[in-house]
Length: 189
Length: 189
DNA sequence: CTGAATTTTCAGTATTTTCTGAAAATATAG
DNA sequence: CTATATTTTCAGAAAATACTGAAAATTCAG
Image (cartoon, rainbow over all chains, first blue to last red; front, side, top):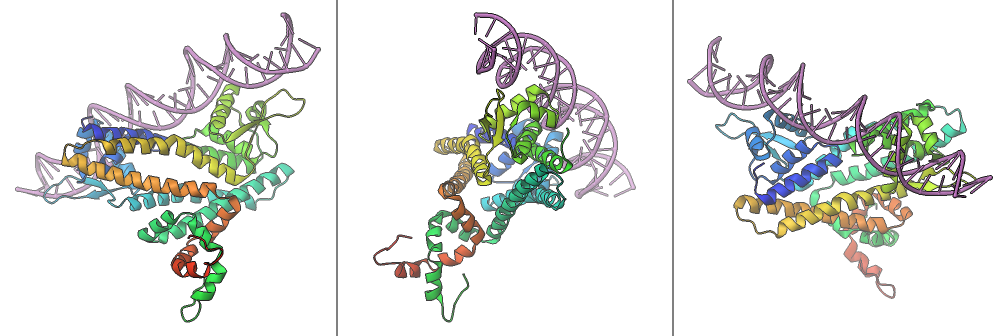
C-alpha cells in the first residue's frame, strides 16, 4: 500500500469498520479509496494503491456495484473501466439504508408475517408469537417513518434533523395551530 | 436443535441476519431464543435447545452480556445462572444503537477529527480532507439528533415517529406559532 | 474478422473465524 | 474445609471466508 498517510489512515479504518458491518476489509478499503478520490479510478490504480491482487479488486468492485455504492464511469479515449462513488454524501446514506432495507428488513418482515399467521399450539408458542408481532410492528413503524424521510428532499431533511426534538414542542400545539393556519389555505396537519 | 417449528424458523433467520451485522450465527441464535422465551434460560437449556457445545454457549452469553443485550438473572433455590433479554422492545433498540455508537461511531469521529487537523501537503490530500470533514459533520449531525431522541420517553418517541414527516408541515408555521403560544407561558421554539 | 487490451471467473490455497473438549477456575452446600 | 456443581478459559480442530494466479471471456481498435 502506497498512499499519503492521511488517506491511508482513513482507508485502513474504513476497512476495519467494514468488517463489523458484513462488508469485507478489501471491499471497505476500495470504497474508502474511491470516496476520497476526486477522479474515478480504474482497477489497476486500485491495485497499485492498495496492493491487492487484480482479481480481488475485480470481486470487490463487483460487490460494491451490486450494492449500488459504486458506479462505472468512462474517460474519453480510454478503454479502461473507471469507478467512482456518489459525490453527494446524502445519496450515499440513502443508498446504504435502501439496500439494507431491501436485503434484510423486507425478508425479515415477510418471515415474521408468515409466522404470526400460523396457529400456535402451546402457550410457549403463543407467547413467542406475541413477541414476534411486537417486533414486526416496530420494524414496520421504523420502515414507514424512514420511507417518508427518504422521499423528502435533502435540504428539508437536514433542517428537520438539525431541529431535532424541538419539533416535538410544536406538536403539542398542533390544535391551536390549525386555527390560525385555517381559512383559504387551511391545511390538514 | 429441538424447538417448535414456529420458534425454530425465527431463531434460524435471526442467526443468519446476525452474521450480516457482525454478530456470529451462534450469538444471534442464542439471543433470538432468549428473546422469545417467557422465562430466563440457563446455559444447559440453551445447549439443549440449539445443540451447540456448552463452551460455545458460554462464549455467546459472554458476548451478549458485554453488548448489554442479555442480563444475568437468578431463580430462588437454583444455583444455576439464568439469562434473559430486556422485556421492553424499545430498550433493545436503544441498547443496540447506543452500543454501536460507543464502539464504532465515536472512534470514527475521533479518527476523522484528528485527520482533519493535519496539514495537507498536496491538492489530493486537501480534497480528501474536505470529504472527510463532510463525513464527520454528517455523522455528528446524525449522532446529535439520535442523542436527543434517546433522551425522549418511549411513548413520545413513538408518537413522533407515527407522525412522520407531517410534522414538517408544522415547522413551516413555526413563526406564526410563536405568536399564539406567547404570553405568560411563552416558549422558545 | 483478428488480435491485443481488459475484465471476469474459478479452482485451489491461505487466512480468519468459529466451535469444541478438556482442563482450570469459581462458587456453594454440607 | 471438602466435595460437588457450575462456569470459564483456551489450545487446537473444523468450518467459513477471503485471496490469488491462471485461464477464459469479453470488448473493441484496426
